[in-house]
Length: 215
Image: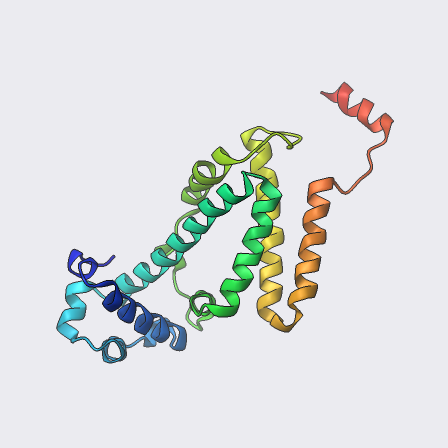
């Protein structure tokens, strides 16, 4: 992560360095990312760079951390705006993510990390699943309005959240492959989310009785 010296730079200078680094990581495989190109684009010396970051791995961690911070801020804002309504939040995520993919080259960076010919050990750069699960519980589950969930327990809500996340990621993957199909992708996403919200089956009275007996 960046040094305190970097954090004391004016915001404008931090942004210039950030944008030069992102441009290089988007254009080049990780092993070919050039510190020389970054400092040339940013207009800083090599010595200055190494007072800000240890190496390019440290720089990449900073970029990914910055991306995560943006999404965390959006998550909190979305929770407040939706009043904690789960499906409203997921729909907001979709709109925000599509806009992010369309306009932000940070998304290209993330795609490149996965698509490099020599795969990166992403576990070195990304949080582990246990950390993600804990953050989900702390940031999302604790603030949701659970009044409309059939099973409002932590486990019940977490199951629905995982299925919704799979629907969301599948839609985003399709959009990234075929951005010209934005509206059909969004419509399929809405229909899939509606199935999750309303349930796939009409449950008969006899099935309800069986469920009650089972309980």
